[in-house]
Image (cartoon, rainbow, N blue to C red):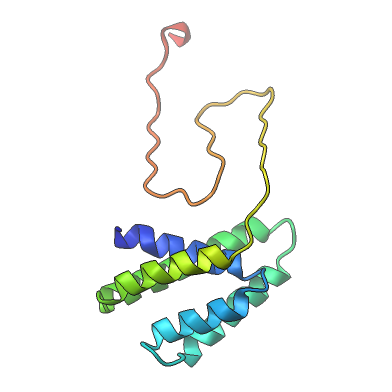
Amino acid sequence: MDVTVLASLAANTVVAAAATDAFEAVRDRIARLFGRGRPDPATERRLETTRAELSAATSTDAVSVEAAQRVQWRVRFADLCETYPEVVPELSRLVAELQAQLPTSGNVSNVIAGGTHHGPILMGRDFTGVTIRPDQQSSADQ
């Protein structure tokens, strides 16, 4: 798996776990990963800060707080993988195990009705490597 994709998945997993009962297990395992087998106190503090910031976020700023935390954790995981390439398979296994522990969400339905849309609309989660190119002007617009 590409390290950039893996770092994104790991970051998304941390952010998703922050609001669940699985957080303590996630915190401990991620801290041991960063500590290379021993709990890393700095990582534990960062994870606790992540949880606190996400918990304190209001409904109006929750999306931006989550996005900021995902970026920070993506960079941390990418740096870890760059510094210790041997951690990549371990992180991949850990992410899969942690995602399996997280609660699954129910059915989601998104509806867009009316309005004028001047570009694509993406709905979902865990988008990586997406490129959106502007369409050529249609003959009707010319």
